[in-house]
Structure formats: C-alpha cells, structure tokens
Image (tube, rainbow, N blue to C red; front, side, top):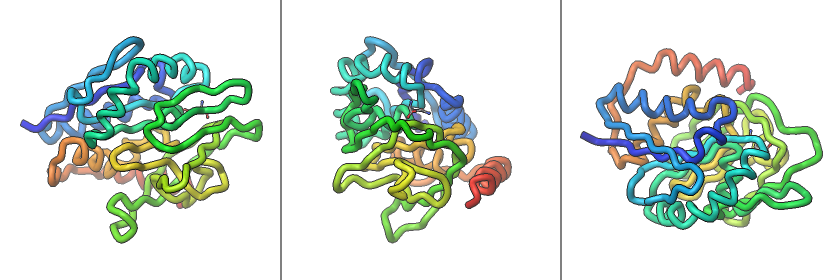
Length: 243
Ligand code: GLN
C-alpha cells in the first residue's frame, strides 16, 4: 500500500491560524483513498532523518515563536532538511514557516536565522501588516502548463524578497503577497515550497493538497474524490478574495 510519511516541524509552536489543519487535510485525503499516512513531530532537539519522511511541514507563527524555534531548527535540523531537499522530498512552509525556509528574518535589532533552503530574505516592516484575503495564480508544471488559483488569507509584518533566479510560488491576483509590491507570492524551488497563505491553506485548495500528495509519494495519479464541499470552500475563498 502506498504511504505518505509526514514530518511536522514544531507543530505546537508553529501553528498559527490552525495551520495544523493542513496536516488533517492530507491525512483525510490519503485515508479516503486507502493511502497510508504516518505523522511524526520534530520538536526541540530532534534531528531529521531525510529518508524517513516524504513531506516536511512547518506552519506559521508569531515572531516570538519563530525565534524560539529558529536556533534549534538551524542547529539540529538544517543538515537533514538540506539532504531531504536534495533528495527531492517535499518541504513546505507556511508564513512564519516560509520565512524560516530562507536565509533570515530581520527584525531590525536582530536577525532570526533561517534554513537557507531557498534564496529569500525577510525583513520586518514598520509599515502596516499585510493582512487580508488573497488569491494567487500558480503554474506548477511551468509557464506552459495549466494555471490554477490558490486562495487563502495572509497576515504578516515581514516582507519577503526573492534572490535573483528564485521563482515565486505564484503571481498575486488579489491581496498583498510577499512584499505588497512585487506581485510575487511565496517561493518554489523544486519541491521546496513556501507561501504566506493560511486559513489553513489546503482545505480551501484541495487540488493543491493532491499535488503535494502526488509529488511526495511519486504517485502518477490519485483516485478522484467527491470534492463538492472542498470546491465550494475554494469558490467562496476566491470570492471573498475578489478573484
Ligand atoms: N511573524 C511573522 C510575520 O509577522 C509570520 C506571521 C505568520 O506566520 N502569520 O511576518
């Protein structure tokens, strides 16, 4: 039986806006299809075995909680996560988790260190937080492939800048995105994905949950599910975002 093995990084601290709901969504969609699902948490002091998991997940958090995790993240988990990324495992960070995938989150008087898995840098701004419903257009198979919409909610003080050559996850249709100005949202380098979209993200975007499951397990296709409720949630999230 195929199986999705998930490692949740700091699931207690990095869980703002119920981001842990993303894990429930993955678990349900696997269970409904008879795909095995294994969830392990990695907290303080835990090292990462890159071969023991198919998907690594870190949700959002307040600056304070991010700072609590960051030193441990870099000291005990960076090496394993670098190896996981190199092996093509899926690594997904949401909001504070997205920021920690990059080099650093600069608070002004000090930096919160990040994993440096992607060439992005976040700077906390004294300007108003970027808050609201958001919709982005993504083309996961490249520019020639189908375009799909992710809908969610964002609330961040950090402005995230992509280094040269680094690709965003999507283009902002409505809302602020990484900086409020760049038109970019999130980051994607291979199977390392970061996004500011909360809500949590996956229940509003079932198609993206399935992309993660497919990519992480290497499955060619997934059995279709009755997604009438999920599709209605997606449409509503798009509508409130104005997309
Ligand atoms: N603390 C970070 C910021 O405000 C991330 C917030 C979040 O995860 N919602 O930019």
